[in-house]
Figure (cartoon, rainbow, N blue to C red):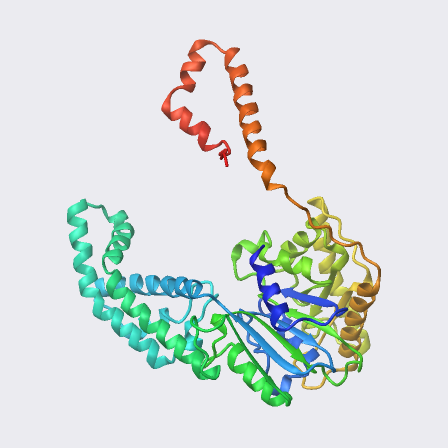
Length: 474
């Protein structure tokens, strides 16, 4: 069972999704406007929830189970202690190494160390949300106090190993291992502060000691959202970095949506945080593609497919999810066209976006990927930062939700889960190994003795086995 399946199984035990409720998975580049769209659907602009910033904001994947008939209830699955410790170790190691470089240059600054402690380089774990500025500075001071001892260890190792300048990184790593006791003490301070903040915001919840989850509910929307903000906010005084997954349910539907609207809205991590996603979509999205009934890629109209959008489309099609795919072009108002009446301007802006999209479809076609997207699966949103939702935007979003519901109501083939006979695996591997050996023996019988002698050389034998799948007998 995958990690995603385990999370879903746990959530279904704690807060099951009602039957016959379609699921929409939103993905897109950082800053494309995914979370802004979520705000409009939830009608939570006044509460400034979820967080919207021009940087990576959604770290904990959040499901919104939306129905006017559901009570307000939130369930949060926390990261494991090992997961959090790994992030903290990464931050500590980077901060200590940078501090050591400054120490060597006599340019050590505690504030600079504290800034390095704020988050991991990929922004997947932000310590600055949980720890206060004073707490980060306290940890930075502890690192500064350790540097003379670290420097002495490095100098000793350099003499003992007679290392060269280009081997300094290895020496620093070895020296950090020798300072493990001191680093562990610093790590314990950080973990204690994290646990304290979780207890403060979660009614005394004991992180890593109590259950793996925390829940809260309310009869009032305002109180419910205010509590959810404390846990999920992308800002100071939040514990969102230690939350693995969240499911919020209730009447969180904007007033302009139909009374009978029901939807599971999944706001996941943006694409493009990892530069590798510009050429290949991360496999972490595939579970959501299978889980969801519809996949909507959000792209900025002014500069569509500038980052990971093209690779996202390629990943969706190659994995067989084209029938679930829709495109949402956000920030249409930012597309510059000639001055004209509002209606004509919008049409001209859409034409400009379609032209850019045509270039992407042609590029995909050259790579052997056919993308024929009907007009009813393309949506154009503008002025989404306005407080009031315009009729055009309301129509577009309602058309999106209606399309998902209609597709969900159609008869669909059921997924057949494969069954594996592990009892037969041992004999199968043994047979495969015998076939492999017989094949190589036949090939060697045809060769001269010099060739066979070459195969007996250690270097070549190691090379062969390095590139040969290992066969394990059970």
